[in-house]
Image 1 (cartoon, helix red, strand yellow):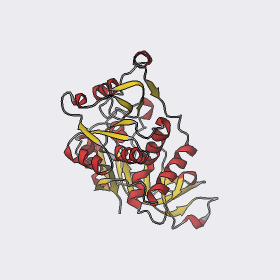
Image 2: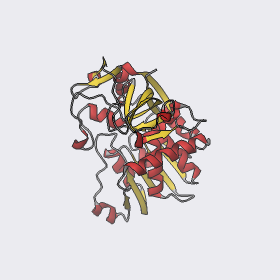
Image 3: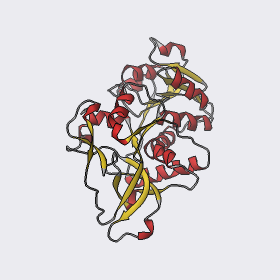
Image 4: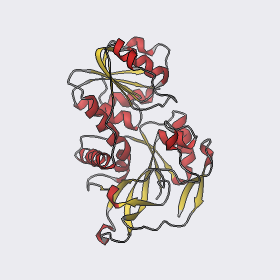
Length: 317
């Protein structure tokens, strides 16, 4: 099968197209003929050898990728053969997604609703469940002023939609006019380019911050919070999480919100719910660019260069 292999950590060109033997399903496993594989910012950090947590570094060589969608073509022992031919998405075990065929546990499979195209379903596997978890954890109320950063990627674009639906006043921060225009089209009431010096001066006090950037941008966002405000630190696109101590939060009368420790069952339920909401026409994943499987390195380079918008996928068919 065609696949992409990482033999050593480093720049995007370390992702090399290769031909590997087809995987074989074991007990409790199936083979998915991959149509699309998701690409996340965290995967670029892992490829570069600088993940948010050292424990996320895989043993090498490895086929990266943790979210795929396609059709079940083979099942292992003790598995109902009626699964063959089903349209599914799945999280893997942290690797194996950048390939024509993916080995997945049956317990992780989510059947794709009939009205949902595979591209959109794959775009929702990781970002959809994270967005729902963030919204549940923050519990925004109608009229609350919520700052989302960054708002122009796969996750941020979903958060803007969900917050708008919840009746919040959405402040979307992103880098560049294309991303800001996208956020406005999805329901953001106010937008700001956080690449500009003193970008935060154009904003008044904020009730909630959902921070996926971190670093100095996240720190500036923290200072915008009113007493009684809440902050959720979701990511570190800048290379570092926002440095806010419990003392800082207490001094500003701000609550640092934590998402509950994820377990596979909960994550699967959230991903399934995101797919169902999208199939009902209430949530639209934005797939901004799709790269051929062999060009996974180009996909990583584009994400790191901040030239992508919405979700990035690899097409294996």
